[in-house]
Amino acid sequence: MASSFISNALQINFESVLGIQDNEGMVNMFKDLEASGLRGFLGCPSVLYEQDLEQFFDTAIVQDGDITCAVSGKYVAISESRFAGVFNFPTDGLTDLSKVPNHLVMQDRTVFSRLDTPIQYSCKKKLLKYEFRLLNDILAKSITVKAGSFDAVTHERFFMMTMIHFGVKINWSKILFEVLKEMADRAAQIFVLLKGDPAVTLGEAKTFPPLKILSAKTVNTYVATNKTIDARGETDEPEVAKVAIVKRNPASKKKSVSTVDKDADVAHVGVIAKKAVSKKRPAAVSETPVVKKKGHLLGKLCPKKNI
Image 1 (cartoon, one colour):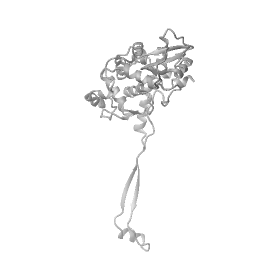
Image 2 (cartoon, one colour):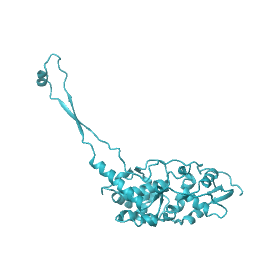
Image 3 (spheres, helix red, strand yellow):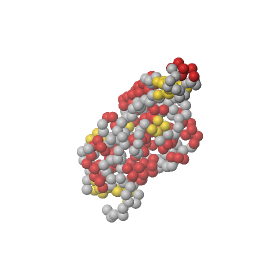
Image 4 (cartoon, one colour):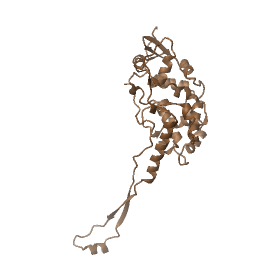
């Protein structure tokens, strides 16, 4: 049961990843992520209180913009201001990702590219440098939390990556609180919020599986695996098969083969190239598809209750 709550979770051990050796690009990506104001959110303790989380999902509703729930027989209210304070989020900056300066987006079309040629805003992840492939995974699983393939980079994530890379201020408090209200899909962060309430006593804690936490070891494995897959995709591509198709004008069946060859128009020969499509794809930290959690969606509105 516990695994269903964290199937798409991805936390970061910042102390470990910032000490990665011989990969300046990867270290700089994590520094940019930290500088954007996400360290408290992505680097919070990775523990799981399964029974308490079930109660949260079963009872959580949205009232007057706040999230209220009942855990351990106690009512808890989570406001945006409390959410921002617990995770030390910046409360100013852009909330509309489409407002990112266009010249920065155009510049990152080349900066993000593995081949140093401009890529599209929406593209396959394999076209990105390894540090930005991983950044795409982090945003997909821990920030935007939307269903879909991790192999594709969306407009939304491309703009978000650009803002993080160039240090554009983002109002993470408002963006992530709205996601929390809609999805209720953040096990580790929910526990931090509940644990900070003196009225709530949490039950037995379980730790996250190591593969759900990015460390120097898991990041190096991620890069090595992607390099191997990229190398195979470039060297193991099957040769293009060529098939000659001969079209001849209708000829009398009584003519001999030699007569047909002489009298018929020149045969039209077309070459069809069977394009070899590689089914390999860059490895993600976790191949588990995004799924909705067990609990209720928190988009419901109900009358304010006296608690």
